[in-house]
Image (cartoon, rainbow, N blue to C red; front, side, top):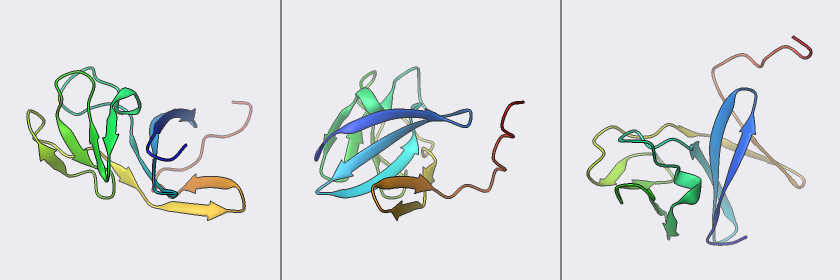
Length: 98
């Protein structure tokens, strides 16, 4: 839904998918500062606030907007294909079945 974030686990990744006004952004779900989950945080505009220590990141770039985190969270280029959201990653996809 618009203004919300969702945890998606796929291919060994835990990702947070953020919907800002119908535009989608994807970051790693794990906060770089502590055990917080960004998909459980508070999304306001392009900023996601971690639910653990209230650090904030820009969902477009992963850059830190407000401490305590000092290291950016990884963000991924998004590809929309019909009603599917995919990401581009430089890591090879896991082989099916093993």
